[in-house]
Image: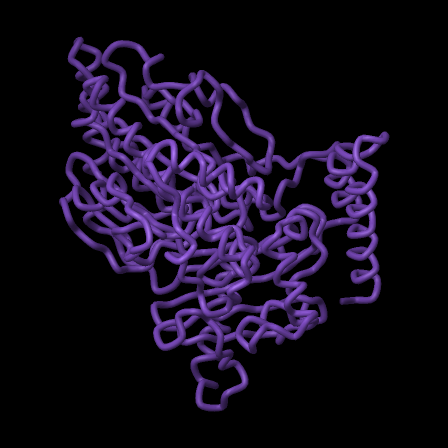
Length: 490
């Protein structure tokens, strides 16, 4: 009721010529990056700008995405809906002849801001007049964005601005990309992250390529932090900083063998820092939140009612009720068919593998081209990986995985078959089953072969007609493998 009254006051104020003093909302969202920032405990590199945002606002320590890959994650946060509820759960789907339409009542968040009188924009950084990354898995009207910068708004008009940055993608996939990243770091900071500063999770081997890649990744974290500083400086220079709520979050975790595309915390856990008017400085929130909640909290901060259909929660509202658990899903990524679901409480993580007869690292042209995955495969074949490092290399999977994420934060020791955890396993099963039904998880029905073939057409045409015969052959082989597994019921 308070939000409705506030909105009416704003409208009445505008009608008699008063300035619109509602807060501006800025989202800064890098790609492919976990919470490797100083305020989250990272010591190998310094991240003064994100750390300053946290010191001046609220830091969430238990923020998780509902999908560990770009387009599904983005389809979720731009609507405030689980991607599985709106048919947007397959990565890069609806890109062929067959399209995906949103349910009739669902609106994109920028449209809701527009209807409330806000200027909406989306861009990369630094601002160069180009639109930023959208990557939505459904048909949408591009007019929901008024431009590419808040500077294009009418005088006195509040704005909702999204700034989408490359984040972890800056490091590339091979030595050429790593060296390019390191040189950029040297140009900006005067040095590159030394290899000896790298501390890998225990499930990754000290392979030279993996160490060098991680060092380049840390430099991409530094550069991302630098970009955040530039955004803040621009807001201050334009005289709008004091009335702007800044939200910093990544679209999912680091792109690595066990991170991006998987439901382990490396792929799901993200930084979430919010700073601005009305937000208590230096506060820390440890409750479980989902990345889709940024839609509801942004609307709430602007005094705009949160639609009843929205699954996101206003986690900054005074009447907010913390979540008991957070949920995530992984489905087809590019040509690779997959079906994973997870539920996480503060102590336990439960993962259900609906396709247990398939290897963890199914054929996938995107991931298989990365030197870090090539390195993992080479050392696995040579017998150089230990038990923890070999987990992701298994040719089949257990149908269920259960981890005590407090005692085992790296999710190495599967407790699903341990009789001592039978009650906990049953409870987590029940939480996931209820969520699947209550949210109308559309992944319960396999994607049609017609839709799959439609979505594969753009990939095949990208390398066809002599453009890249080698990559075309790999992709065709992968598609054939996927269809063979499906035909065999695997």
